[in-house]
Length: 122
Image (cartoon, rainbow, N blue to C red; front, side):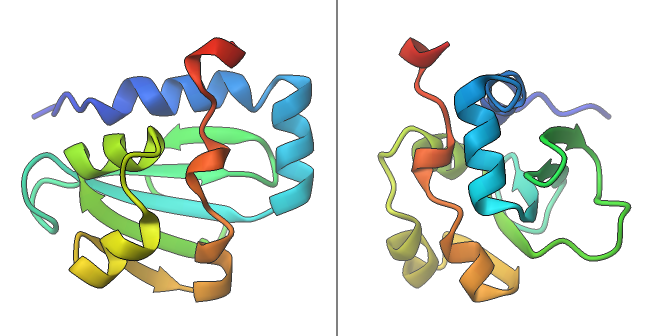
């Protein structure tokens, strides 16, 4: 059963952004691998996994296959959209329980809404 998420289009935009000059600079600066478990309604149920590899500049639907990601985020689709648009503060989302993190917290802190391109930049 394929689940259509609002996050899909944002991650597709991020994938294209990482190929631009600005995206390449961002990749070199962060150089980490993140995994997202995005749930349509409730964290832990019917999650769709994405890997954002800022070492290689790839956004892949599916689990990371090169070992362990530096940090894994679990959140609902609507919260991912708000996070990407800068409408949700990642720290507040974490404190509220809307964002769960596994792995390195220092790596997680480097993943900010600034990573997501704004539509005007494309």
